Length: 261
Length: 261
Image 1 (cartoon, rainbow over the protein chains, first blue to last red):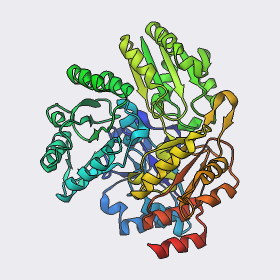
Image 2: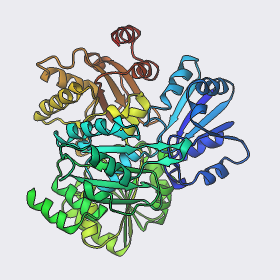
Image 3: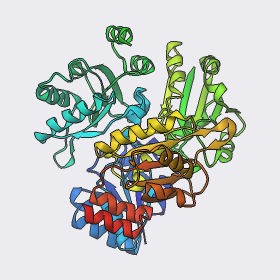
Image 4: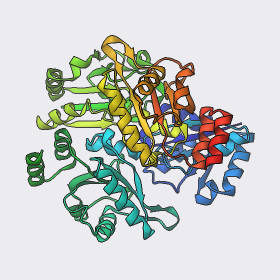
């Protein structure tokens, strides 16, 4: 009958009126617990109330899981709740296309995503975002991410690096791990003089952001996952000011950057 | 005392619980009416109720306007409501930095932004977004936008093109105008065989999206502004499927694209 793909942001207060309506109108609510982490899943479950709720693992939302969900949505109103925005990662697009093929209507309710928060919180300019990339524990990932950073920075652009999250193993890559993996692979010294921003639990009530030279970012204390990282390209004066006031850019580095502009 | 920068998305139902709390707690509410268009400003004003409301023009939020707002926020709780997300455009960052310099606390409440909606609605992959650019009525803008498209497509990446909006003249660029300006400037035939997506009132209740070859996008009927445009780079099979099911990609073009993959 209807499949609702509902973004729920990072915390309870990120719910939009539209997301609440979607949750209230659904017969079955499926909560995606594997593409990302949400601060207030228990409060969301309270909001859902007495209706049927399922916590979905990867296998429930991929492969044959997709067919099962689409079949259910052909009979009743099914809402899939996704931390962040439902379609910024490519994961849920396969469900949407399969539903369309079977003539099941799909409605997307967008949610806040780390992609826009990373820029609007740090003060870096979104129109200077180059290609976004995910660093995973897969050894070939480091080289790929370094190539993307090189390609972006050569154009003056920033690189947003999302970090691996393996729900099934409860394993989430930290900024410290990411920095150390990238530095080890960085034979050309691409990162040595680059300013970066370490982002932890962005949009959560205990979010933490810090700007410093990339090699130094591993030395800070961060709250738990999810983490992500920005490697900056060319910085505009206003961006340097923003990193100073929003992300605690160290004063000495601030002065050096301002002198260079 | 406190300056709240509050994203209100595109329509009333996009309000987050956090945005509603921010509006209710403010002593003075300023609504930005010039950086973008919102579907339900009147319902937002109803929500604000009896407290002081101001509709702000460009001059109220730039230059000396910034100092005036920061001075007010030093005395009482001021919320600036911004269609979409408050800091994806660079406009409001100057207010945030000025407040920080004067020791006035700033809180950002994020909102849905066209930047993430353009990808999550169309089904194009966000990690293939290259540099984002705005096409303005300024004659030099066409060349700049074409250079960005060339640079992005040469790397297989998509280009999101935001279109000029001149609140003071109530003048908003349409997809038709944008396509005709770009084709006229496109001496190298960069756009001829490219697939694009025309986006009108994305996130509004009457949103409209259509995928076709860029030169054909000017031939469709769109609802009113705001409009934007995506010029695609290399397309993954799933993206072609998504454009077919989500954006009405013509069947003949679909078959041609699938054959090429």
